[in-house]
Length: 494
Image: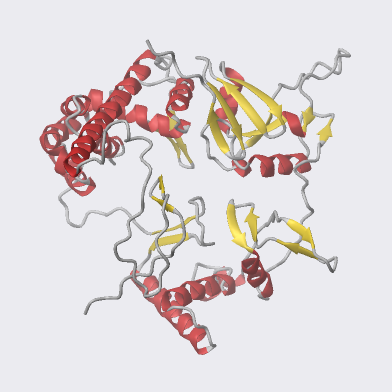
């Protein structure tokens, strides 16, 4: 059975990134046969005298694809040379590492040189990468050059895509337990000739074989396996539908109990008149479970001796601080109306006004109204430490760490002075060059706070909430609420 043709809206729009200059004829039958948009070709018109033949387009695509591959290989080479030119101190105290709640982790495997952590940001700025992304790029380059030389030779020759080589490097860097140099060399020999066909699953199997070959894995079937139980709630990824992703691996019994509870909740919602789809009702049911069961009933689970005598404080399930920024207008009847969207401050997400109404309507939600924070108000204090009100104002104003390309949420950042505070100024009767005022404060994550304090990066603030950075090598960037703008002049072409 042939499905009905989709109805195409007769509205001038965009096809990909190319502007449509001709709209389709009015629709009357639900069909739109024979119409093709007329597209301007601002980047291709100088390559072809007339309409390009399909064969010419294929040839151009192949040529440009090869050029991209060569350019990416060149960037990988630059990352390696940059690392070699900026070694860490002999004691490794300033070596670039990845930080996590569980400690630190090197950016590349055993036997690779350590890199000065303060040098990484300069390269990241040049490539439009966050400092962590630049660390990963440099770590992959070092891993490939020193521990995967056969694969390194192929990728730098432009024979294989950089992303495939980096996939292998990422796997060997973070193999657990850590692979010795000989084990990585064995993987290099196995994967380099066929890396075009290798996916992450194949690489993981090679790593498992290498661990067995080099005595890092046991053949005992009864050996204890790593515990993979987990629950992850992705509170950082962007979402435009007012949702967050939840993923978990549970004990079989717990998973079956949860399935039964979610299914029952979804059925109850349907019986109560909900017209949502089954998937939506299941998600709503899971939320209801979270709100009604807010602490473990340790007394009834045999959690240990004395558990029945202990009182576990049950807290209100939902605690969300909302800062809602609306466009307000005065109606003819002098009432005030607001736009339909706001910003959920502690997760940096757009939310709908109707969504907020639903949240606060339930009896299980504790509603607490916080004072309005005026982002345009200039707050000041004579002391060095910002007040709580200043700190919250600056965090709301900046959204994230204000270092170029950094996206770490401002709530996790330090609030630092743009122009340093002079602790001796008052005692010596001099004006304070770095006052603790709104306009002289910025949110910086801990690593970029240290970088500003201890290296040649210079920071200025030409306007409240606008920051201009100059790197030790003369790169310039402007940072504001809308992100990072590269102000570095293009190098002169010879």
